[in-house]
Structure formats: C-alpha cells, structure tokens
Image (cartoon, rainbow, N blue to C red):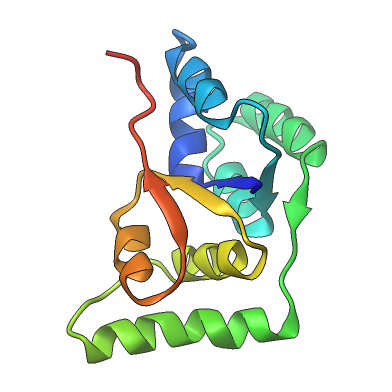
Length: 136
C-alpha cells in the first residue's frame, strides 16, 4: 500500500532544522511509495515564507508523484462533512476531506497530524495513522 503524507507532517519535516522529523518519516515509510495530492502542493506552497523557500518547495514538489482527482472525488469529499454534521461532528477543513477522499479512492495509507482525519476515519474506510514526527 502506498502512503500519502499529509501537509501537517510535511510542514514538520521542512521546518525541523535538526533533521529528526525527516528521519522519523523515512523510518515510517521505508520501502513504501510516497505520493502527494495537489492539495498538499497548494498548502505547502502557500506557506512559503519568502521567494527562496517558494523556489525550493516548487522545485521539490515538481519531482513528486501525485494522485489526481476524478469527477466523483468532489462529490464524495463534500459528502464527508455532510455525514459528519448529521452525527454532530465537524471537520475544520474541506481540503482535509478532499485529501481523505483521494486516499480512500486510491487505496492509500494516510500519515497525518490532524484531528480531522480521525473524525473522517470514523465514518469512511480511511486507513490513517496520526503520528508525531519529532524524535524524543
């Protein structure tokens, strides 16, 4: 099973100057294919702090493998918060719903640090693991 790494994890990897976060993620994905979504690309690039970081991220992200949306992705992702609200639960980000839906559609394991995915996994067949990436 390939692995989709959420932006919440990538942000720790890119911001951790000690390299510990990158080592932790590498150990968790050892031997598995890693993919991104265009939503991850958008979130990471919008978080760039300056032109130099933007250029570095854009270059790095250009070389990554992506899963793409289908016509059904949008409808099925929109159904997630609808179904959760009916149970009295909410998700904070529609982008998280899209990322989760892409993980489901493509049979991907999702590594994340975001509580929205835990709520989504309660009502969808999302294979997700919440992780801490900094070494103790």
